Length: 226
Image 1 (tube, rainbow, N blue to C red):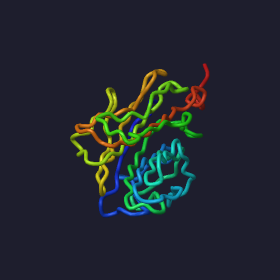
Image 2 (image 1 turned 90 degrees about the vertical axis):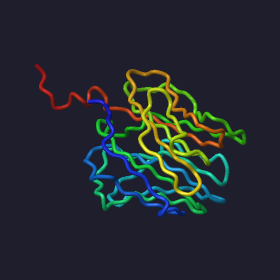
Image 3 (image 1 turned 45 degrees about the vertical axis):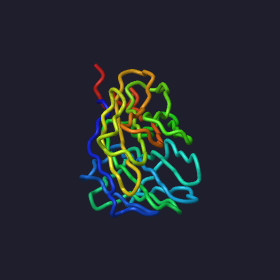
């Protein structure tokens, strides 16, 4: 069974601050992969923490801190317990004045640790442009979920276009930054690049990560051998 998006949710302007909690759009299913992508903007940011009220240890694929005022990351929880719509995942970053958080649930991912290696990250480094690109890589496992997350100021939702083959799943503007999540389930192990195109030249921060399906032996567990 291929990895597939089940539900997605995002925080709103009312929850801006140094600690933001987000709930799933619907009750999740036990054993699914849960992912939070987030961006923090502020001054002298501290190291982030990600915790969930329904338990489990949230693990990072990538934490990107290009300077002391910005941090962007992708965290996940494999084989998660049920998170109801009253449960929360909390992202806390001391010094932050804005935290944008996207919450996504996927079925069909590996239940031991769905992360397929470390993620990639990149930023504008003082040179605004109309393209945000975290970099390209080749997944080590076939048929991965590739997830990309972008943050940039002064670009509205309609002005952010995902890379070819990717679907924009979420977008939000909390205070000053527009944040977007894109995904794609690839066939095989092609070179991938979860880049973005912006309608105007802007500062940008991008991260991407890969998540794997179960190993072939796992998918056969419990089937009859003829």
